[in-house]
Length: 291
Image (cartoon, rainbow, N blue to C red; front, top):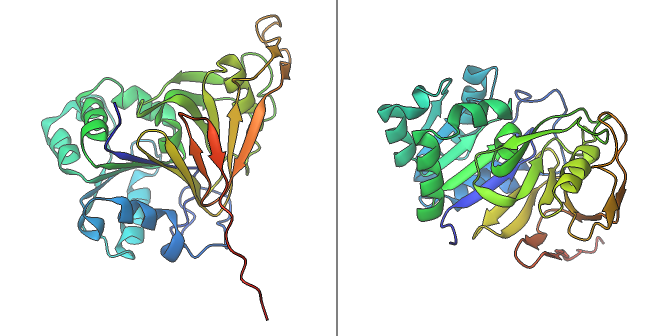
């Protein structure tokens, strides 16, 4: 069944004009409020700037500050109907009041933080089911940055150091919120050198596509399968379908893992990948000559 909703997953450090969610500097090569990701979220929503937004700060350790930053950022885009939901327990994720707010929302944004908080607090709750139903049946926009992006897929990386990622057992994977299947998402990908985490995750389940999102970079996913790169950086795709061999099942825990014939794609703003056809279409912008 083709979902009517749209999914926007972002690698973290969205350029909202602050450093709230990251210690890394923000990119300077894109005018955020003209071409940025938050504007994409707004323009794709069914009512545009009149849409009802809910900012889900559950993953964050500084939810009040993060919520305030998003309210200010969307206000600069003329979006005024923005609420913040800091749900911290499964009881709250089942409350009628909070469920009603999610049902009424046109846009739901999951902020950064700890993705395990998202899966453990929301998984199997009333709000989780409402979100899944809305994504399938309504033209809702569900967006997630950093932890919110990592938790968007059915499979979710929640732990694993970058330098030791290709040691057996180092990368930890569990179930995510399941808006999209057949992929696994890692974030802050380029800046934190997480290629090893994605290679390991894909080698352990070659039928899924590994998605590595750079900061202030994301994917706009429509129809459940058409993924368009947006933002100022890169998206790395790791495709294990043609992997020919790995010693993953043979080595002891903590030992290095070998992988043969993994396919890697690099996407930038405007490139499109079809999950059904496994095809990347690269956008070739026109170069304007400088006199």
